Amino acid sequence: MELFIVTLIAGICTGVLYGLVGLSFMAVYNASKVINFAQGALAMMGGFVGYLLVFNNKISLPLGMVLVILVPIICALGINYFLAEPLVKRNVPVITILLATLGASLVIEGGAGWYTHFGWFKTSFVFGSTPLTWGLVRISPQYVVILIATVILCFGYRLLLNKTKMGLGIRATGTDAYMAALVGIKLKRTRMLAWCISAGITGIAGFMIAPLILSSALMGLPIVVNGFIAAIIGGFGKPMAAVVGGIVLGLLVQFFTGYISAGFGEILVFIALVFVLAFRPQGIMGALE
Amino acid sequence: MKAATLNRIRSKTRMFVLIGVLIAALIFPLISSPRTMNFAIIGLFGAILTLGLNILYGYCGQINFGIAGFYAIGGYGVALLEKYLCTPFVMNLLIAVIVGGILTLLMSFFLVRLRGHSLVLGTIAFHMAIYTSVAKGFKGFTGGEDGIKLAPLMLFNGIKATDLFYYYLIVATIAACCWLNWTLRNSRLGRAMIEIAQNEVAAISFGVSIDRHLRLALVLNGVIAAVAGGIFVKWTGWVSPEYFGIMPSIIPVLSLVVGGVGNIVGAVVGGIFMHMLPIFMIRFAELSTLLYGLILCIFPLFLTRGIIGEIQYRYQSRKATRSVSPEEGK
Image 1 (spheres, each protein chain N blue to C red):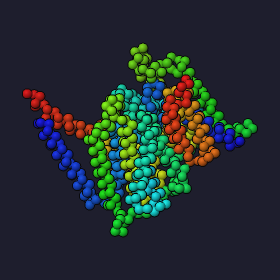
Image 2: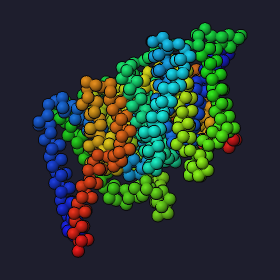
Image 3: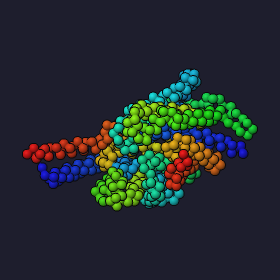
């Protein structure tokens, strides 16, 4: 029973983090129909900046948190300005844009890796490490913070997208950029905003995921792949679906590694992806929303 | 100048260049030190992988980020067969390549349905599945992170195969791959593939079966990667998961972008140079990832044709204006 509860909590929390990365994919995709492969590198940047500054140079936690959000945003704006905008303007194939963002991701990872000599960087549980206990349920404060942050970010993003004029602008830009420009939406500014939101979410996710996995400069790619798969399993193009897909994925992997065998987790992820793409390409939530 | 004469001259120059390159490749071992030879072999392996990818990405326009997975199938196929069955290398390589081909064929039934980012993700997930299964899943069988040691290759007369032998073997493989690329491009199959890359709807309306052509391209890609993997592990005498990480999947794509997508010469040149890049900058080895990233950012923006593609384009357009303009002036 205890193993079951531990696995359940771990599954939901790691899944939710992949869901957050998936959500940040959606934010960029909703506005500019670009898949940003550098999302994983931005997540790494969040963790990297956070733990490097907060622990090695003793910057206070609030300032550290601000930097955790700010630095990925600056990187994302750079990618948007120098790569995504010019390439979208030239109407190049999707794969070319994807390759360019992969290049940006390698640049960020290479820079961080050069600084840390591609070693692990030290992380710790910022929010305390003594688990909270209610009867059989033992949960690390890190997980509690993750859950709260995810709920806030998801519903905040959903509200922003559905209830504000800004969100309407983002959705309109994604649906038909030409028409959106015609009714007076500033395309460039809207896209920049979407990239900022996405990078902010990714930075937070990276900061929280870093203590849970072996964190190095190259940790971005597994995050990006899992986040992306979460988004596809949930249903591509729908923000909340990414989180649902993430939870499904997290539970699958954690239960499999906990009960059956460690080391086959990635194969399971792959099989899940194959099944979803083969039998339900619109994703679990695809038809619901 | 008439078009026919121009074509004859062009094919003649092409012939001379080809023969020159072949002679240069054959006499290269005589003038190189063992160290340079070693580096050249690493670069040439990259050229094989890039040529394999060229069929899929260059002609069909579909990307494959899981080349390291196919590469690993070839490598582990050879190593496992040698460890457990003690069969000779040639047979091992043959079986590994056939197994790789069958596995790719099975995968392709799923992969041909994907396009764009889903395809990228599907192939990455395939690579990760292969990677973790050899590194962790079947640890007892594959030796996990420690890998498997291979015996050196013995030739017929009982002497050990040297780097020289591997060099000629790989050059022959590259020549075969180039020939395959070339004949494919000038055949009905290749033209259909290029048509798929340009416009799928048009291709269907001409009666081209998209699934079949993509499947063929994927299988060829997988088979070529498996051949390279099999020879590579025998050459290093060791197989371990670290050879088949994510970078061996990314660098061939990068090489193709640098050399020129769909360009055979570009694939060879790009493959050789991009795989030898970490060796050139051995002092700043930790910066190589950064450099790869910069290259991958810059080429789609400023050099979409790739280096070789751009050179050919400039050369041809200059020639075309020179030959056409006097007649137009009359």
